[in-house]
Amino acid sequence: EVQLVESGGVVVQPGGSLRLSCATSGFTFDDYTMHWVRQPPGKGLEWVSLITWDGTGTAYGDSVRGRFTISRDNSANSLHLQMSSLRSDDTAFYYCAKEGATAGPYYFDSWGQGTLVTVSS
Amino acid sequence: SYELTQPPSVSVSPGQTARITCSGDALPKQYTFWYQQKAGQAPVLLIYKDSERPSGIPERFSGSTSGTTMTLTISGVQSEDEADYYCQSADSSGTYPFVMFGGGTKLTVL
Image (cartoon, rainbow over all chains, first blue to last red; front, side):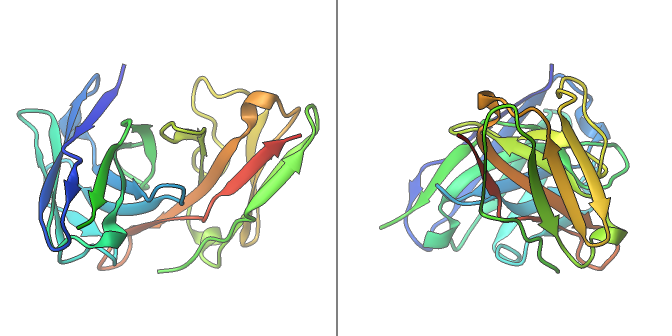
């Protein structure tokens, strides 16, 4: 059974930094592209970032490009999101999501339970 | 990038058929995917590659396409189907690959 468990969500001040992690199990982690997707409380889903199976390819949504950095540790089956210059509109549940196929297209067949990041003074 | 447009809400009575649309100019060129999100839970993949159903998803959920509009059809709606539904597409061809979601549709079972 695929399991994705996010951690690291806390209350942080505007302009601050935060690192989210996602521990995975139940599948061959280094076969798959991985994603972060976020959802402000009571609002819709927004794709944040992806990283290819080997970590050599990354992509970001327009609203986070230049502020967030995605990374992965295939030896530890873990995914990370380094967030900096945080703003109030970054407040959201952040989900770790597994790519649905080993060779695209981009979609998500497994999701974690989410971790809440609150940006507030 | 481009946008995916969904109706904010759809209401149906139990046993009826619900249809949720997703419109986007690039949809004929890209696959569409559908997710169900119940209150307080993570999204669940319902439909992939326009019309394929993952194992464990009931047959009453189906996807179809017509031009720039994708439709999620739920036949014989049950009370447990009350949830938010999101369409999603992606473009991996450009310099900056990206993924987009529709705004979501709240399905109310009357």
